[in-house]
Length: 168
Ligand SMILES: Cc1cc2nc3c(=O)[nH]c(=O)nc-3n(C[C@H](O)[C@H](O)[C@H](O)COP(=O)(O)O)c2cc1C
Image (cartoon, rainbow, N blue to C red; front, side, top):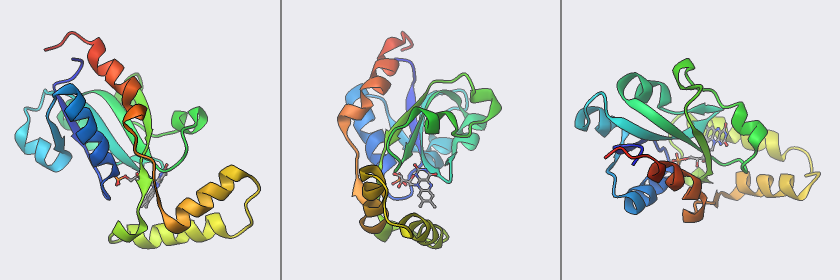
């Protein structure tokens, strides 16, 4: 295995589900970042999964300061798109680290605190004009009613990476 543990952040549960699926498939322990900083040694080799907030992978900078982050999964609501994935911000030290994108979901009813007005603003911006393509239409629908795109199949490249290594 290329990592010893899975560490993640999740505001509304989608990233947590991906972390759980990976833990089940790999046999590795999965910890939310808050627990991981207490439960794991600081040099633990980790696969990090973080939810996306305004292009930032939440918790990644903190995880990178604390652990040996070997690969990163960014979980967002956008459809997978190489140009978008290339723009995701990462700490300098992780520029060469494998990065995977997973489409999570959107559950407006589970948003708390500042995230509610942020997404209310985004929803207005995205739905203001009529959709010009089926893709835009489905994004508008996702912003208005939510969506769930978590799928075990999407984890195949991540599992391949995990299993490619010979670390214990
Ligand atoms: C305030 C806010 C900002 C977001 N920004 C992005 C973004 O930049 N790109 C993206 O693809 N998804 C974005 N999303 C969608 C979340 O990343 C998506 O819902 C993700 O699945 C949440 O994972 P979680 O359930 O583990 O928290 C944003 C969501 C919120 C609430």
